[in-house]
Picture 1 (tube, rainbow, N blue to C red):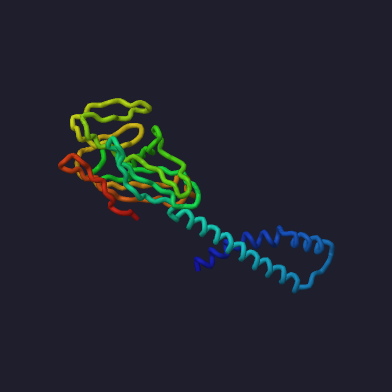
Picture 2: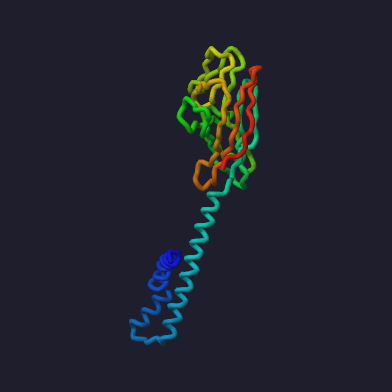
Length: 230
């Protein structure tokens, strides 16, 4: 019953527009106003044709809405590869798997145990200074810095557009790379969830993936894939 009512409410505006605002309706109205008498079958034919046309227009609108919703829910991004560059930076790759460019951001959505910073935490786009979002071409990818492991006696901490050297009490400290600052976290095992998402709503559904941060006794760190997150 609810579906029938929804269909009727979708058809009614189109039918009203056809009956009252079409060129045929205007011609018939002028002739009728001039005293011309139309046969009843012609009136019924016009009314029936208007209903059929209104049903088609309502179906077309619903089809367009479904297609738009499906487009928004279709993933256009994937989080695939884990990379580690010189200097102890650990990164993830957010890839555009669609046929058009997408403006992308990445966030650290969750971390277990908890982070000292409120979540979600924006991740800095690799190769850019304090930049959160990047236009990624079709089939292309963008790296995002997740954390920095201090494997030496010092750690470089970003302070706005400047780089300052900070002495670390722990020569093996771990810093989350949240632009423009870095956040120190305890050296322990973590399970994190990273989300890569289009900036614009019509860009498609976000991609989420879980990872492990596992410090090792020899001061190295294993950054491993824990699989996609629904």
